[in-house]
Image (cartoon, rainbow, N blue to C red; front, side):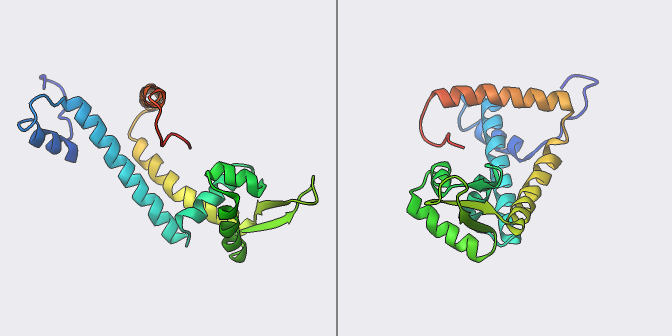
Length: 176
């Protein structure tokens, strides 16, 4: 640290890196620090998400279905939802049955093809989905608010560049 620089606050990862450097002398502390922090933040946000599901009496599959439906402006066909969720149509039917029983969605005859049905969010379904989303969004905002807007934009850009390289590498897990 140079004279006149403010003390940098330490986090759990700083201790983690310090413990591993003597064990793995070739360890790049910046790479290890960045990756470990991303993992820990991801786990933290996953826990907040899971708590929001508990608070709104949803399981992950129900939330995912409501989320995909909301992403289609609250209305979709079962086959569109199956494609969005990367599931077979029969699997979506079971999910929709449970959500309909709870009053979170409704099935209506298709406006364009009388042989089909559309699925739409009810007001209760939208409110439940939004409540769970808001809980996670509030925590994301709380965490990222420590950065001024220019730094947040820079962070987003840096992570985008890393993601482009990761996505080019292929493999599973990149479908949103």
